[in-house]
Amino acid sequence: MWSCVSSNETDDSSDQRLCQDLGLILSFSSLFYLIVCFPISLCYNALLVTVNLCNKVSMTMPDVYFVNIAIAGLVLNMVAPVQLLGPGYTHWATWDFNNEVYITLLILFNISSLVIMYSTTLLSLDYYIERALPRTYMSSVYNTKHVCGFIWGGAVLTSFSSLLFYVCNHVSTKIIECSKMQNKEAADAIMMFIGYVVPAIAVFYALVLILRIRKESTPLDQDSGRLDPSVHRLLLVSVGVQFALWTPYYATLLVHMLSGIQGRHLHGQHLRMYYFVRGLSKLLAFSSSFAMPLMYRHMNKNFSWKLRRLLNKLHCGKQGCSQERSPEQQVVT
Image (tube, rainbow, N blue to C red; front, side):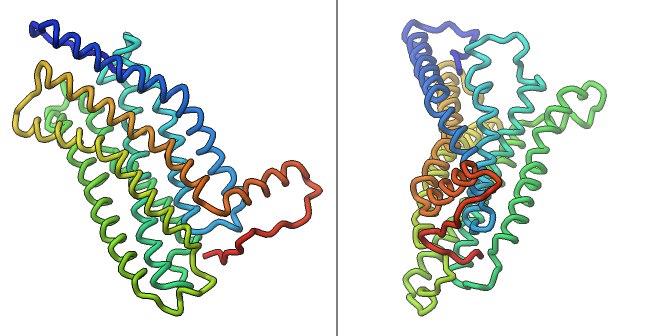
């Protein structure tokens, strides 16, 4: 949770009251998330991954991307409790900006955000490819799994800037050149451009293409090999929710970056408001790991069948049960 920002300035009673009110809002919001949203998010993300991995044969291209998003959500679940319970609220003596724990959490948070945004982006593009060129296997499950591996690798490499920032803070007294890397605004600019601007442009382009091709009805629309129509609705909702929850966080990065470049440092009430908005935006970002699996659970028609099939397997054990068929047989792409 977040507390009031310490300052050397003399604050009047109204500013102090505002600071305390903002701290209470964030504290109660964080507690609500940790008590209600966090356990649901942890259970549903783990359930989404388990059910799909135990039914690999029936997985489709969108399922692979949502599994990837769910794994990133589990990483966010690891970061959320430590992040939302400190340092301002708990006053841990070992909690510092240059501390190894903080940098580790920052890197994990950045990796998760990149994986979530790019998985959503590539899901949009692959959905368009599947709609425009069915049965070409360009967006097959096999290819999508490899693409998801590249997403994680790219996210780790992009987050390397945070690791360099951490290392230079420890060795800057020994290496003069490293002092040039102590620029958090540059790291924020990298995350802002790669983590938000590029995915936003790509998603917008993909949605325009999808809407255009949906207006052009062709005989291929009746092809049984096409994706389920409910995937289109799930895609639109997922994209909207993801960008709605992550946009405030990247907006705070933009504000911090611009203020650092212009040399305008926030003070007093403006600084408190910035920390409040930043804390609230990070809480919204954590909420994406709660919203996505719930949407997938309620909007994916085959998830309930896969879950029942998994439970039957566990119940029957090694002897096996009678074969069940999906209510909607889909050709695996």
